[in-house]
Image 1 (cartoon, rainbow, N blue to C red):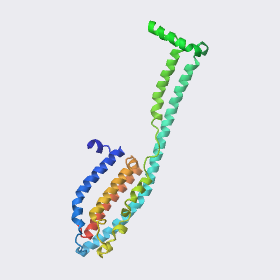
Image 2: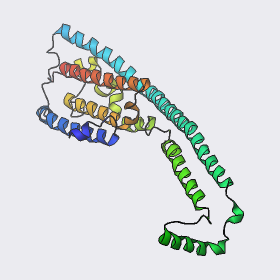
Image 3: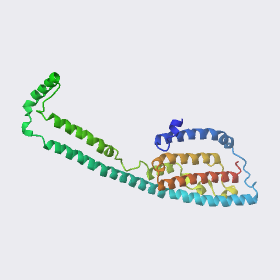
Image 4: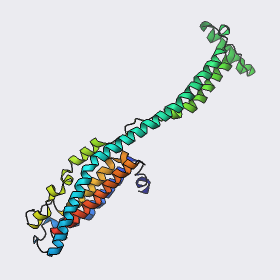
Length: 281
């Protein structure tokens, strides 16, 4: 599948296909462990040494603060990246117009200069056009030449001039794009609606103190392996949903991508510590 996965940076469709393949492999690899723990692991919550429990608790507190800071900053970073992408496309369109318009005017003026030299009085009337055309056709078939009674030379010159001009201005005008990048804050909000629990780990999965006190009831929804799966799926959907921004060569896009990757790494590490504190290893 290299022909697809090698284009994930330039094609949203390729990014979607790659994400779906990763998700399928991820589900397969996690299924066995999730099934093993689905019946409920050991519930002895204080088997950790006291020093290690304190260390894990402190780390979880720090991670929760950093995760919350990163998640709350996504919205602003997306807006900045969107504005930069929009402004960049507007600038590119202006450059194309500035270059294309003089070429278009050059073609128009060239055609007008040619048309100005045509003696309109010598041109046949509308009722004479069919007969003149037929005479020219017969003369061309018999002698290989045509008369210029209809200014055929000038007409061909004008058509050639138009074709020449088109080759200069069309590549610019036909490449003018809608400045809207194609994704933005609404895509982010749509994704977040399906992963509200990941916007606040302490509220969704409990504080270290609640875990140590045995206040958190273990269910499939807060099983560490399932949390990892949702974190990785959320990250994948973010990469697809915001592909138009994350694939840009732009500082604001790089900052957004770095924050997303940092959040992913910290969220997975937080889940590992959560599993250790819950004695689900």
